[in-house]
Each structure stands twice: as C-alpha cells, then as structure tokens.
Image 1 (cartoon, rainbow, N blue to C red):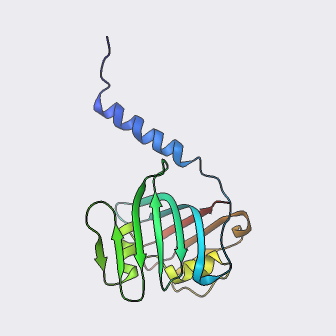
Image 2 (image 1 turned 30 degrees about the horizontal axis):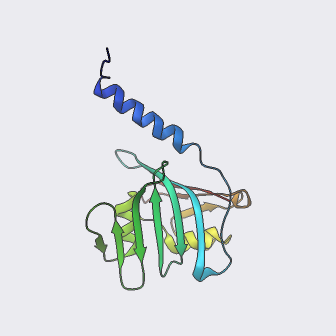
Image 3 (image 1 turned 90 degrees about the vertical axis):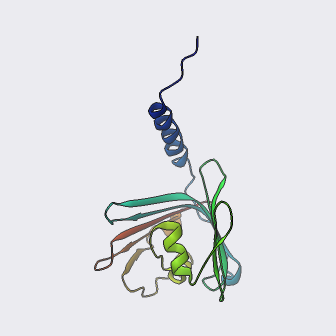
Length: 167
C-alpha cells in the first residue's frame, strides 16, 4: 500500500532537487565582440543583504546592449521564469499573465531581482572592461574562466552579483 509523503517532506524534496540541479551548470564563456548584438548565457546569482536577506539565482540568456536588449531567466529545468525587455522608451517584465511595464530599467531589475543592477556596467564588465560604477566593485580577474563577480558597497544595501558563463 502506498503512503503519501507529508507535505513538508515533499516540499523539502522539491527544493533539494532544484538546488542540486542548479549546481549542474557548466562554467564557461560565450559572447560576441559586436556590442549591439552581444550575447551571453550562463548562471546569475544575486544576494541582497537586506533584512531579511534576499537571494535570487537562475540560468540566464542576455542579448543586446544597455540601450536595448532582452534578459531571460530560466529554472534549472529550462522553463522560463521571467523575461525582461528594454529599449530607450520602455522596460517590460513578463512572468506569468500580463506583462508589467516600468518607467526605467532600474525599476524593472529591482522588481525582477530584488535590487537595482548596474546594467550599463554589466555589459561593459562582460566585455572585459571595468568602468567606474559608483557604489560597485567588480572583479574581472576570472572572466577568462567564465566567472564575474561584483559587490555593491555601503552606504547602499550591500549586495553580491555572481555570473558564471557557459561555453
């Protein structure tokens, strides 16, 4: 006779599966040199040291530039979790249901990841340059190995951004 698992155990099992699957992403680098058609894929993690601490991680596919582009977040199983699109006039977040529109890309990234991200600098960082980004410190030392990390420093709420690129 089959017995049902308690709901707490089922939930813990599902979370464990997602965490294990999330660790199975290859670390590598993929990008084009043309800034207008830049394209990167990999794993992105954001941790915001607010109260309570907020953490977000997902596979990502980033295309375009800071002026116009698309960022798609996917689960470790490959389903789309969120699609962010922007251009000079608008920023849009598509999760489930109707798309949500925002006044700025900063407002959109804050809604999607829990914090504002320096998108213009992110594109430069992924291309190997480290422009002065007030409040952020970037480490590009491991970019040739497909790893980028950045920290937002006080007085703003501290945050960490980690990117692992795929080949």
